[in-house]
Length: 308
Image (cartoon, rainbow, N blue to C red):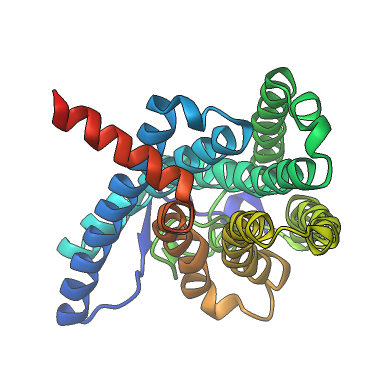
């Protein structure tokens, strides 16, 4: 398309999930409830880990990172979605939309890598328990964290630079938030090469970490089967089951979204609900309700505060 025929929009229109008044009111209360649960649940987990010395281990250090990411990931879109749904204010400026899209993409990539790092941590703890403190020393953990956040920033920056965001195909997004795949559909020009690039990037961001997770758990399961103590095997399995549950929820929706773009294009906004809201809501419950150490640490906090 020639530049002379391009139309520049300053605002975009979000279609949302529904235009039915009763449905919008119901969704508003649901989103408000979810956001409160996400803030309280992840905030509780971060607070408990920070103030409990017995939880100052690599596993909980990375779990604290996960809760922080979930808070940021939902906060960059959910308050706006709540406002739009409640008041039917569907217009959003292009600048705010791109900021929301870039921040969501960045935090999403961080979580993909973090889940792989957490799987490696469980592999080191279960398969090499005698060398665990050496393998996952605090220096190693800090280096992995810096690399994780740094690589994610670079990948999200490359993704943003490589996408043409001159809108000439209308200004209506069939979504409830500024998701990069949907925003791209309004961009000018031939996007086939850009979509191919994004598919390749999605492969490295989603499939490669998932392969590392699967390989780690193959070794973990093999080691668990060799543990003679039923109690020790049960405790290790419980920790791994929590992580696997989060992996399945997050990667299931993300891979369907980004690796099956053409097939599922009409259902993008519904698929994104899984990793956008469901996973951040359930993460604190999955890791706390199934984890005796977190529950014991929280009981100690309550006891100490009640005694004052």
